Length: 189
Length: 273
Image 1 (cartoon, helix red, strand yellow):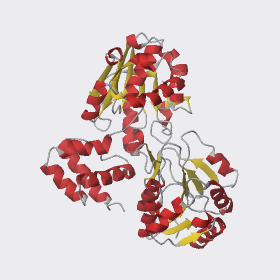
Image 2: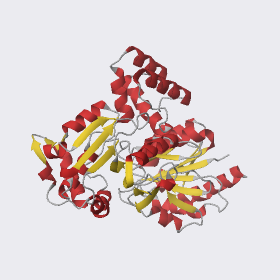
Image 3: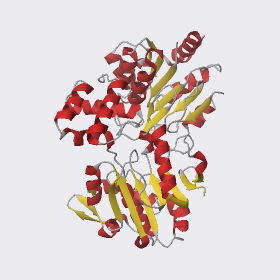
Image 4: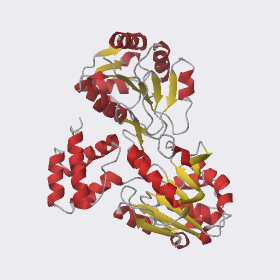
């Protein structure tokens, strides 16, 4: 059963992310949590993605309760952590791989909470952030999806993950968008 | 891969730290704490929390180093310039109506936030009637804060922050450069009292007009957040000001009804009565 989806990306990830969000089913039961590296200013990412879906899209506040069927975005300049199945937490601990928010921090803490119930997705990016976190999701029995390096605008991030372990799926953006939706419908039915 | 540590090992360690060293981390948010403990394990070259625990019991010098991992925060002068601009524009005119001012910077770490307030108050002509209490649980951080010495190469960023915060004049009016360090001016230091205080175990020590506690509550669980907000509520004078970090709020706390927003976006609140 997919209990939560976490998605990470950096350079070249935005278009893919929008494709994914557009395809997410209206009946989505689990939370979807996103870390995209952004410059440290208030971002319009939540509004941008909100226009692509009728699901609620919001930037996370500290200790915000986690609600299924909602898309959550990490706020700029804070790490986003999953504290439990009920709530998020934020931190201003030092950047990881030069990034805050860091994908590794979200993936590792989410894996601690959801174990095999977690689906992790790593997209295009010019950093190695996220590879170690996705590896942890894999090791805990979760489902892992890596954007195929050939389809990625910047292949460093997906390639770093593939150098560490063999993920459940290596997919193109189209395959991710449709495959993730199928995965969620199948597992939540 | 990170070293695997369980919640029960963590709570056992925190219990020992509390009993032996009287620091209470038992109601800290788990996810951040766990990450910091994992980093500490690497530093201490321990494979398990049990080994670290043994080390703490045998070696008194280990604890201060662990405390660094558990508490230290890096901040900037005028971090979040828009926040300080809002304080300057919306709060200072009201603070100016008090004959004397007390400000509490809770969780001051190495002092950047406290000096930012002192500079702002100096620029607004209020410093001479102000006392800033800056508190933290980490003695080593407090000693650094008291010294008020920061790397000179950080001043470029701080100067930009200061400008964004609506600063009058130059930031360099408030420090002098000694080799590659910036030493904060004695006029500022005279107005700041740095003191050891724990939001988890201590009570209030003075009535204040403004409490600033930014990016500290994110490390607490909701019970401890409520305790801290209760202290702030009790310490604040009627209609006093509470400043939180830009992603923190009183909304999910037991004190949601006790504070009203003055600036929603900058998380500046006023005590309701």
